[in-house]
Amino acid sequence: MWLVWMIAFYAVGNEYIIPSFTATFVSLGKCFAEGSFWIAFLNTLLRTALAAVISFALAAALAVGSVLSKAFYAFVKPFMAFFRTLPTLAVILVLLVWTSPKIAPIIVTALVLFPIMYSQLTAAAFGIDQGLLEMAEVYRLPKKVKLFKIYLPLVSPNILSQTGPNVSLGIKIMISAEVLANTYKSLGGLMQEARLYVEMPRLAALTLAAVAAGFIFDIALSQLERVTFKWSRKE
Image (cartoon, rainbow, N blue to C red; front, side):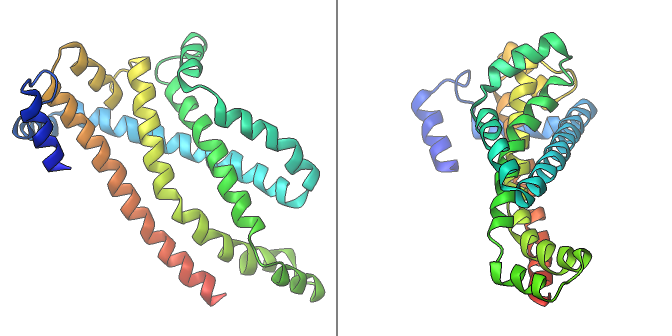
């Protein structure tokens, strides 16, 4: 990636189009020294976390209903297709009329993550070995035992393996929405400001910071998968 960057930089020969590697990292160091950058960075992460929690709560509630009732699953399916194909830009423009630049990115990110998480949850639940479920029925295991000894141990590894990629996607969607909404004190807002003043090294530095955040979350959350995988094997 670094080699491609250097080839592109020397091929174009214009820092207003592609900034140099050195200038970008100098600008990144300046960003790390600014209090305003860290405030914007934390605001973006908090909005992403809030959107992810809202999406997961809604997806989990609907996934439980879908697993318990085939009729409910059939009812929800077209709505999931609708949310998956909903144009993000159009939603942001509408939400900016109804809400504020701080709230609109949260709603947009939640709407994007919601159908993805729902599909992951239902796929994991439907993928449980039917033999185990039939055994639980034969031995009349209590619902609490089935929940903590069968469903959660078997579903958790599959779900947590997707948590890191989901959060990384959420950060990407959040920043894009913040750029379009010109959200104050956010990474997207800082990128929009850098674009307006044609500060390409700063824009590239902010982009690297966003990529690094997504990468760190992806790696960190992957450790949770290992813990739940051990729990699954134990149960």
